[in-house]
Length: 253
Image 1: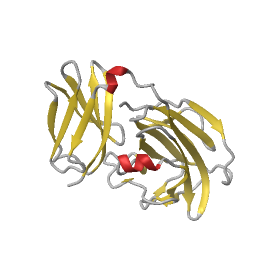
Image 2: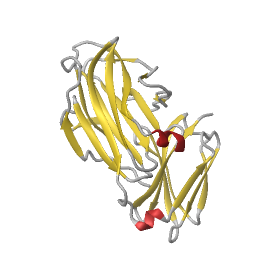
Image 3: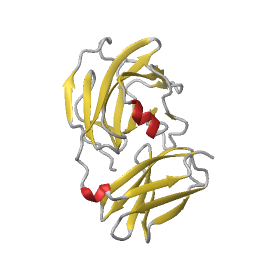
Image 4: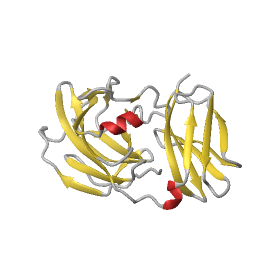
């Protein structure tokens, strides 16, 4: 399993929201980049067992400070993904810069769902909106993420993730990766079976900062996360620089 980040296609949508008062762009290493994605659809093609990550930047263009939140609506869902991965999705929402990004990641448990961590974004200030979903089997989801000011939906972006049979290579099909416990408070065990030799193990926080990176001899490794901050992290196994599989883990002390 591997992460996919690139925007594979963008198509216009008709969304019942007011004139754009925020800019929505790609989020890369602490800044916004690329064209505005307001009112568009981000389409991802994934394998049947893949962690799809979408990183967006939201910029306040109201002309004044605003208390903002995110609402997520489902138009098409794949219930099997929820059964296989609990939760199958996560949404992180918070201002930039915030090196800790604590308490800002949530697992949606209803539809529609709204973030509880509203915050005031200063005029022209930047916020990070990270959405990820773990596929499991064939299917296609269609979600809409709204930026909300009070009770008004001021702008939105759609996300469609579709799995395609056979896009994983044979090498990845033979590799199994497991992490436990999850959530974890002290020692995290990571096991990767089916690799030719040693592997590299990397952990990143929701801001994309690498918090752990080590070459592993053998098939397993225990990582002491007792000093890591609470939050959602991505655990990635790499072989010769190539991403093999990724898992999401929650650290909770």
